[in-house]
Length: 159
Image (tube, rainbow, N blue to C red):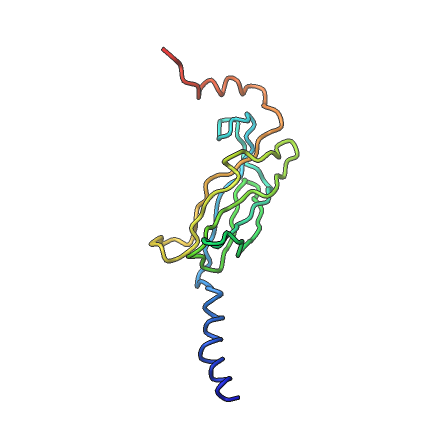
């Protein structure tokens, strides 16, 4: 019985403690969510940040693809979100992901803008604990008035 307790104390407990991979100072995933009023698929002068949108951080096992971590958050009044992550995810693939729009008239996720890759480890040379995610967006149900003029700026002219 004593040998079993010694084994547990020396090998099992340290393995369990290191498996949680808690970090001294939490990493913070920071980004913004917007509504694309012109349905352009990217930000334009008519784009507006979205308050109250639901987002989450999802980390998956690099080999199996199984989700091993999820944490939800919401955007503030300026459309910005900050999600604290207290674990290191060195060997995992992590993304900030759109979950739900706060605006029924702007609820369609913009293809290619529904997730943003983030690196959630302290073992990568980045000195800051803040990890900035690319902006993610929803598209309005219908293009707003004046969008045709806005989109002309982005079109190439053939000479």
